[in-house]
Length: 156
Image 1 (cartoon, rainbow, N blue to C red):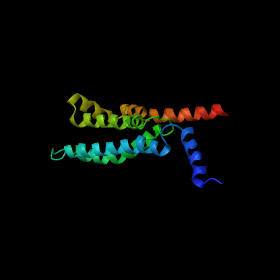
Image 2: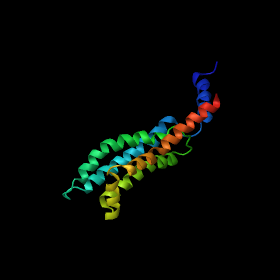
Image 3: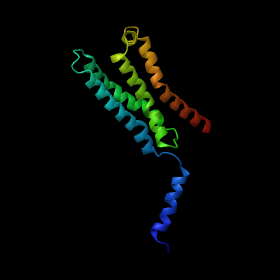
Image 4: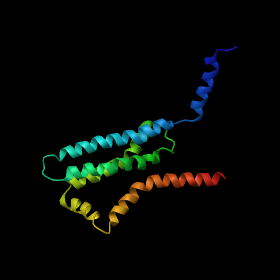
């Protein structure tokens, strides 16, 4: 009789070759958690850069990140159901939404006055631009969910 390792190893290797690409744990780690961790370090750097200026911008960013960071964790879930061949591509795709939010925050803090005025005006009622921005942030996740529903319906 063959040793136990000889019987188990081919099954394990066959399982790996049957499902190429990044595993579920890698997709969550590289596509969701690592980009959000990079964003959190960027947030702390941005908040610290406003200290001593006499404005409330840093505190506004801090309290805003209490909602932004969990939102980005949920929104970056769009990378999980897709198949990724390389972890770098997965990480870069997961970094898109945090980069867009970080760029908007930087524009709000240090951009020229027309950009600051446009971002501040977005928060004035009727909040049209806030809804447009929220829709654009949720578009990748919504697209992946609709794709998964469409594929499931087609299989039946």
